[in-house]
Image 1 (cartoon, rainbow, N blue to C red):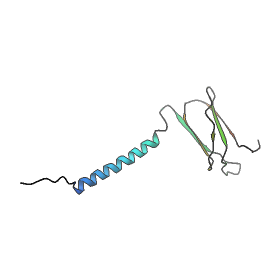
Image 2 (image 1 turned 30 degrees about the vertical axis):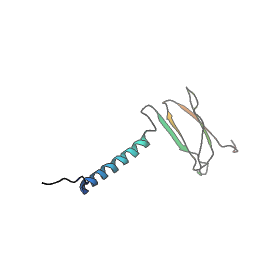
Image 3 (image 1 turned 180 degrees about the horizontal axis):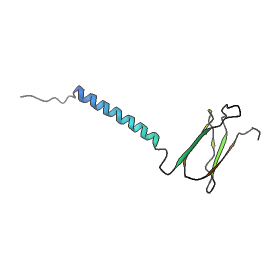
Image 4 (image 1 turned 90 degrees about the vertical axis):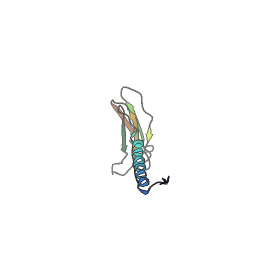
Length: 102
């Protein structure tokens, strides 16, 4: 009589590891795609000066022309800013740098 071992076989363990790795990668991509929906958009950009150097600390305000203003954002150390979950429509963007001229 032959007894069956409950120990995992190397081939089965390898297949499980490959499936788990693929699932983890897919799950990671799904997390980055959930920031928007089919009915919203996003706006992101950089705040350069006339010499194309980035400007950190710029206040960017975005207002929908037929709706409320979104909260203002401030550009980061790399001059980047972004607005998420924007509904379709026309917007006005105003950028100001405290302490700079007109």
